[in-house]
Image 1: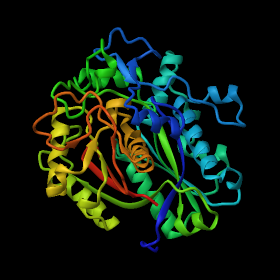
Image 2: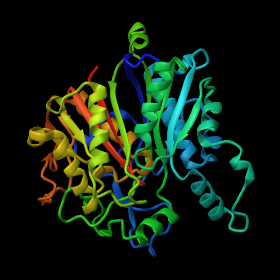
Image 3: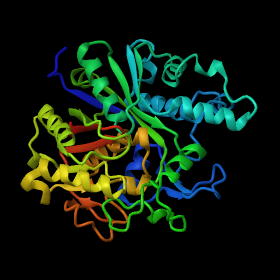
Length: 405
C-alpha cells in the first residue's frame, strides 16, 4: 500500500430532494432552495412529524428496462441510478467490463426497509426469504457487471465518509482500478417517521415545511428526515491524468474516532470528535487556516449543534471567526445513512462554484454556536480546501478533507 498516492474524484451520481444530477443539486444548494415538503408517498395524518425531503421518483438509467427497474426496491433504484450515472460522468461506463471496479456504499437499515415494504404490500406474508439471498450492494454490482469487490458500510450518518475512505484504501492497495463509493438511504418510511417522531427528535413545523430544518438557529425544534444518495468514482490521480479525466476533487484526508457514549445522544466530551477532525487534517497535511469551507454535520438539534460548535471552535482556534461553516441539511433534510455522501457533494460544489452554500432558516443564531455562519444566502468564497463532518449515531465520528485538484 502506498499511502502517499493521491486519489481523485472523477465522477458523481446523485439523487436527492434537490435534484437528480450533480449540476442541478449544486445549483439548488447555492440558490438556497429547500427540498422539504409534506410527505406524499404514504398517509401521515397520524404522525407527529409530517414533513421530509423526499425523492418522489428515481430516474431509470439509460439502457435499463423501465418496467423491471420500477419493480426494484426504491433503495436499489437509487443505488443503481447513482452508480451508473457516476460511471457515465467519469467516462468509464463503457470500460466497466475491462476494469476492476469496486463498490463501497453506505447503506442503513436495509433489512428493515425491505421487511417494511414487504409487510405493507403483503400484510399476511411480510417476509420473503429470496430477498435476503444477496444484499443491495451485491445485486447492484451484478446488475452492472462490475468485477471488483463490493461492501456495504453501516455506521449511521458517518457511513458515506467511511465508504469513501474504504475506497481510497482499496485503490492505494491496488485491489481495484476504480471504485464507486458513497451512500444511499431511502429512510422516509412510515416506520422511520413514526420512530423518530415518537422520540420527539423530528421537527413538528408541519405547516411551514421549508422553514422546519433550522441548524444553529434558536428556533429549531428537531431535525427533518431526508432521503436519496450520492456516489462518486474514485481513481488514482496518475491513472485519471493519463486518460485526461475530468477531476472534481482530491480526497486528501480522512479521520475517525468513536466515543460510544450513547445510542443517539452526542457525547458531552468533545474529545473523540475533535480527534477525528484533527486526524483528517493531519492526513491531508492541512492547517486550520487553509480551510475555505466547512460543511457541518449540524442536524438542527440543540445538543448536536452545540456539541459540534465546541468541536470546531477547538480545532479551528483563532480561525473560527474566518472559516465559513454551513449545514446543507437545512435544505435537504437529514439523509441519515446518506448524509455524509451528499455533504461531500456540497463541498465539491463549494470548490467548483467558488461559493459557500448557505444554512437557510438561520434567522436567530444560537449564541452557543459562535461560528462563521453563512446565513440564508451563499457567500462568494474561494475554496481550495473543504472539510465535511459526519457524526453518526452510536458515536461514529468522522471527517473528510477535500482539496481542489
